[in-house]
Length: 125
Length: 355
Image 1 (cartoon, rainbow over the protein chains, first blue to last red):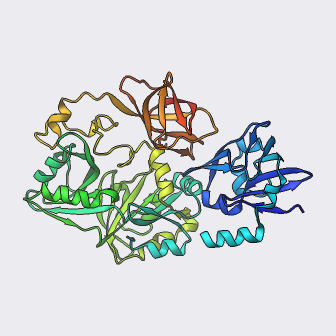
Image 2: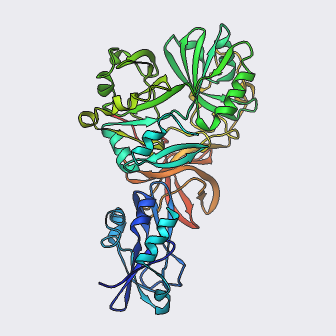
Image 3: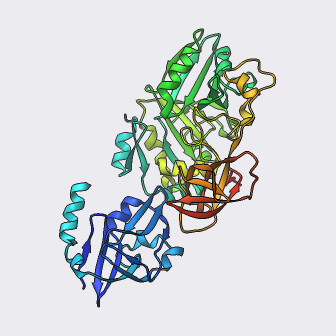
């Protein structure tokens, strides 16, 4: 199992064969409530770490999704356009948002481990 | 501030939000689930945060008639009427429901956000009547949805068939004295219950039928999406002191004819608004338009969104926005969401009508 890491803005990321898969955490989906639409980035788009790469709308509010690491988008989860609720139902699996080709692996090392993230959300809860 | 039902909301695991100083339930099971349940079964809402004033005395009607734009003269006992109250310049103080209990006794229900402002305004203009804020000693619950009537009938002897929309009766809900009005804010059939604020067991009495009627606690989140679909405006978003009833679809609530005087009449009679509130629907699925988003035509800003949300019933982005008065229905507009322009069209403000 590749290691799951987290950002302070509640994105998760894991690296599989040199490709980073990105989504939002279970805590984030629960805070947002029912997700009803998503604006996905275009494949080929290049993002720096921390840049807005997608926007999700829940019934109540819009939220930016930030690139957890820098890189080029190589694939997005098109299925979310018709079924954005997959992010609520399966945030770590079917609700993945994008795949990125990382341009700087050191950024990944700097992110929070699962253990650290759990402590972090324990503090802000 | 907390309503008498706060501990119940907490124990049900509701997500609590601050609503104009009130700690209110935003959602229990989820906005979508609660919304759909009100459209198909019945929802239970704590609306005890709303302001309730009692107006008593022989001059009650005369005082209220001066304050509201609609004509209360036409009410019989146990009847209610919706109306804006305006300032002299036509701006809206609040929108209220006035219930006539007797010729010398009325109850006025106002928005939670305006409670103290309204009490002052009404008191100052009703010197010859007795105005009392009874909000703290009464509780207010709403039950809304197609099964509301069948559920409530299990608990009251009064034949609810005889309680028509915008009527109010005295009743006894399984031992609890209360007033039941056939009013609401969801676009569904339903009731609002007024009772002594100590009788919080009324919640459990209504909820005991959850298996039979599918009643579910419903929070402010679904209340907002329900009222939006039903074309009901919200004070503070779709109208305020800088908006007149002529600019929002409330012309029907202004009694220019028979009624002699009311605050704001002079200005409203001579007013020719340059903008109006209309409904809109975003045609692209990717984003939801929100309050404050700019409305554009031919690249120029022509108005703004006052309320915007995802519609759980229609499954698209809907809302209300101001546009120039000459804009028609079904006209193409764009809405600026986060700097990008999304295609939308103007619609009626009424997105949902119950069958």
